[in-house]
Length: 112
Picture 1: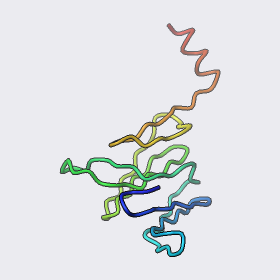
Picture 2: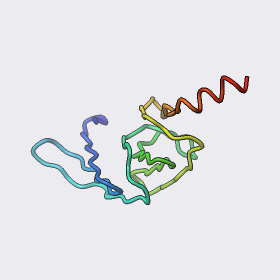
Picture 3: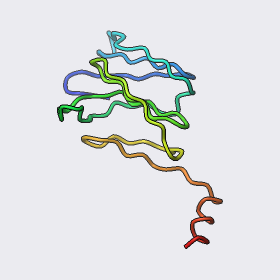
């Protein structure tokens, strides 16, 4: 993904993610991250920090957690009350598509 003049690349396998930046000819490793569960999806998202300043975060989604890693050292993990199916970046923010099973949908219909 492109962030201004910088091109970032995220590659992952299992529980390990590598983030590099640069051009096709020359890339530099920026961060190497490891989480406890296998990575389902990862992307770079613009979000606001505690000081309400826009900042880029590497977001790693596993089955049960969302992990947010800033390029300046702040790391936050949040348990998800649902299983996410897909993730898309918003500007700023994150959209998580919730995965639901047919059993869950039928349960909601019969409860109402």
